[in-house]
Image (tube, rainbow, N blue to C red):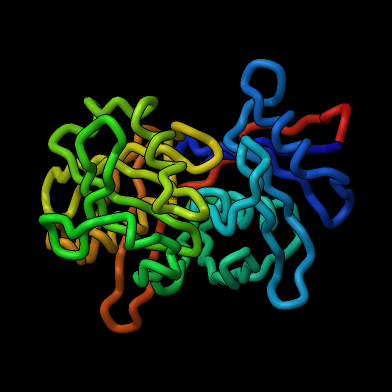
Length: 283
């Protein structure tokens, strides 16, 4: 299996060009290649596939083999691969994902894609559609927030947004001080979340800038989460914590977000980087 390793501000994936090869068991392959000691090392596996409704199609598998609907950093890198490797030269580019068809605008330098702006569409704010079971929660102190009961500990207050995949946004005074490796898996698999949850701890620096750290569903601690940053932008407006235009500072780098008032769409802009290519012996 020929692969390409890519990352969007440190959120890294193994990409396979499904136009000229196939992966028989993507679940098993995702688990194997993602291992950072015995594999290539990644947050997951992304397949670049033909589409009958867009220029290309993305299937994304987390490091534990579970398939996710969308990945903001992953889709930027997929667009770079498709453009740089000649699958399509359309700009804007349309990409079919598990949460619908997205439009991506590519900024190129010397014929190669450097940054990508993704129209992520409208956020989903209805709890059952995210999905969240509201019967397991109580109202929080912030607007549009809920208290998540933690067995043997204090409740955690969160705001919920779906960008095609589910996100819980938790505001803290110091994001770096959060014991993410302890609380992340507890919240990911909480009984209130039937399809598990991506969890983000957010520190507001100023109204147009936040620091965030992520526990990603199926992958654990990641250096960045594009859909999560979009959800943070939406949550900031709904809770009154931040503005519609936002700079999100993640451990791997920065993303620029905007929740447009005129059409309710969220825009995400950030870099996409190709790291190396190689051959995996057992696909």
